[in-house]
Length: 229
Length: 229
DNA sequence: GCGGGCGATTGATTAAGATCAGCCCGATCA
DNA sequence: TGATCGGGCTGATCTTAATCAATCGCCCGC
Figure 1 (cartoon, rainbow over the protein chains, first blue to last red):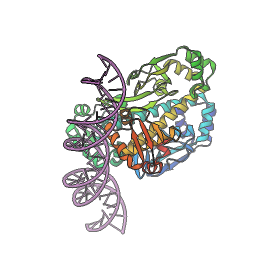
Figure 2: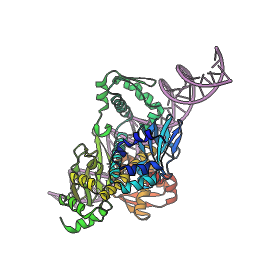
Figure 3: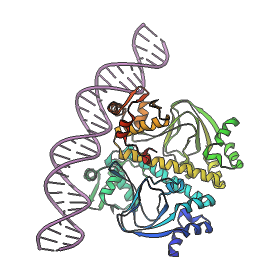
Figure 4: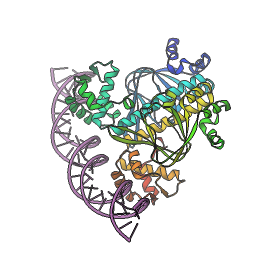
């Protein structure tokens, strides 16, 4: 594996404090892999053999039950999954698939657990990462349980706008049907939500979003840092 | 604070590995408090000044948005909250209230963070605890997003039965309206779900649940370890 | 023992969202 | 260039769940 790639990983919050020795132990058994779009990298229920770190591309975490499917989250460069399963040595709770061509580092779970035992700094970094994931999961649950679907869509658009530096014009990052699943609704209803949000100062054409009246949209969405971070 | 109480706490997974010195540092600033039923111990949005550990009683974590409220989880003896906020030094994402008379230990967040920095064993224990909470949150989200409400009720009853050692007769642990909120439905619909589950071999009278046909109930519920643990 | 209050239940109604079906449009490819 | 396929849109319909309203039953205090 190219040294340069590891230097990049080394600087991630998860590894920045680890001892050189520990980092080398992690790297030793690790490998990088390229995946084409729409490839399953992990299947829920299977043992967590590797911690995954995304170098580039984007990945969807999703779950299934009785033939139904729901999107749990979208991940991008430098994100990791699925840490909790690795640490606890328990099966994955979610499946993972690439949304586009993606490059992923895989580190054997056993190595992670061993370094975690011996390197206090690494353990602390993991705590921070897990606490962040946990809080994100809580926010997501609040979003689903407390808001109706057009409200979720409105807040999602506000968050996207924020990620795009506050620009009033930006692109949806994924297919609409993925976004719909993530927001806990059908593609049809996402479409209808976009239609009704026209009256709140948003227009969506294909992947392109135009926020024409941020105040009206914000007033409708009632964004809240304890949900939308 | 009575020494005996701390001995009990000392044996919790979260503290069992910590050095004596660290444990003493944690105990030094801690105090125990009794709360009457229906008392708010924490309000979402406020800074996380204390890690809470429940000695006895039961506590509900809940959230509000725009006048709506939802129950996020129920906690009992030896459970802790809200660890992630304490570690990250960020505001609570959920409010907490007692459901009955409860006894709670409060440890200043700063002490937790300091010991966390210096005691690797404590940090590791926190990782385990956080990973468990995270996985629980994911399971809960899957439950809400993938299942219709009578399915959630059925699986909730199966879980209760399991907690009661597999007995076919047991009591609901909380008021029905709390359970309804937790399961993401109205009390009316919880009532209707109970009524429809009669045909699946369950009868609910007041707080008393009677599982008369576990096979039929199970077949309807399709319990799954990746959701119901 | 008698009201009063609250949670639970039940039925009627309304609203929200899912499903189904038909159509459009742009990308792809023969 | 024309055919095909898949994603997305839209309207109609159906299902689910929320809301509203009335009643019941139980606990508690007077």
